[in-house]
Image: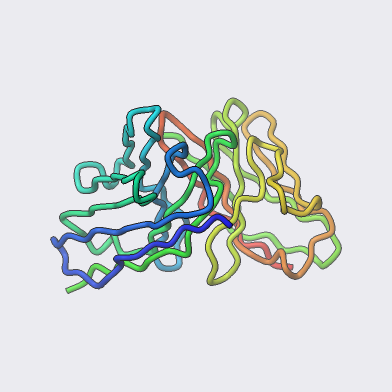
Amino acid sequence: EVQLVESGGNLVQPGGTLRLSCATSGFPFSDHYMDWVRQAPGKGLEWVGRSRNKRNNYTPEYAASVRGRVIISRDDSKRSLYLEMNSLKTEDTAVYYCVSASGGTLAFDVWGQGTVVVVSS
Amino acid sequence: SQELTQPPSVSVSPGQTASMTCFGDKVGNKYISWYQQRPGQSPVLVIYKDNQRPSGIPERFSGSSSGNTATLTISGAQAMDEADYYCQMWDSSAAVFGGGTKLTV
C-alpha cells in the first residue's frame, strides 16, 4: 500500500522557520518526482514545489510565491521528502500535502493526509 | 503565467450527468488532470492526460479537452461524488491549479 505521512506542522510566528517531513512507503521512492502542494483555509490548491528524482539530479522547482524562502530536499535512503520554510508569512498558513508523481501520468498520483502550518503572532 | 478558470459551483440531481469545465488559453495544447476532494479529505486523482482514468476510479468519470476548454464529466452522479473538483496542468515546469468547482449532488 502506498503511504505518504507528513509531519512537522506547527504554530510559528511571522518571520520564523519550519521544516516539514514526509515519510513514504509502498512505491519506488527514488524513481518518483515528489511535490508539495498547500491549501489555505477555505481556499483551493496551490503548488509549492517539487524535487525531481536522482536520474534528473534531484533538480528542484519552486512556485514564484515561495521561491527564495523554501528549500525542498529528499533522502532516498530514508524514503523521505522535506520542505524547509523560512521568513514565514501569515499567508503561508495552510495544510501542506506531500504528493507523489510517478511521471507517467504527468499528474499528482498519491497524496498524503497533510500537515497544518499556522503562521500567527 | 497560465491560469485555469473553473465555475465556482455546479449542481446536479442524483443519476444525472454533471459536467465541469476548466478554461485556459492553451488548455488544448497541455495535458489536464482532475482531482476530487471530498470535505475534510485529501485530494484524489480521478483523470490524467485529459481523459485517462487511474485504476480504481469508477467508469462514470470521464474527461475531454478541446480548444481552450477541458471538461470533467460524471455520468450518473451519485451522492458520494459531492466534492470539490480541481483541474491542473503544467506550464513551464510549474503546476497550475484551477480555482475549483464545488459539485452538489
